Image (cartoon, rainbow, N blue to C red):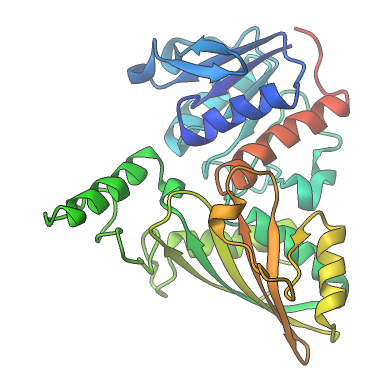
Length: 334
């Protein structure tokens, strides 16, 4: 089986390649593909280096599975081409997330959506800000979700390599008593927080906030669930944080809530220990969604989540979907 990773030089693309190698995905051949400007560069795949091919001239005829970690424009242009050649596609972009004909899948939440897919299927992967939140909410569904209020604290890697370079350059400039140049973000990000990610609609809701609202509802299968989100960009390089407040039908103590979260694969840090909370820095580089600061007042539960946005929130779901499709006997040798 031959696999193409499109957007291989992106942060998510590089993490996908790392996970494919580490987890032993049984590909006979992995091909790195990206925009023409990246052609000829190399990316790591296990202990090998792959030379990047240009997506504009790449043919998918021998590819069984195409994993897209590029932007929406590239996905819209080249996903149909890959599918027409017979490849299954897993896409981590916003291009198809709102298409009702395309399954939106987070394996930790709704893996059943991967059953019975048609040949050359397309699967969309949710926003990395949505997946850990939806995993926690899915765990609490037996208690009856009434309303969700979430504030996200999102690292600059969520905006890509250029955003990380901007944070680094601005930090250096400020230490050197120079002006911090602003290009990627609307205002300075170094030593600052930006309470707006994306454009705003007529109601003042940002693109990122609308994504959290819509995709969380869809993953949970609760289209009318009240979800109120505030998305904030913070000056950290990796790792997102979520402050979550959930109104429930049934009261629950913190211990019972912790057990439900643990049963859903979330690691819970004991509030009573000396290090009783988990920071984005601690969550970076592992495959875990962490919960801490679990509190309860009546039927309202509050907790803190953190996870590696690139690895756990993006690359891991893409690879996990590929593994599930393989387990379900979806791929034929091509």
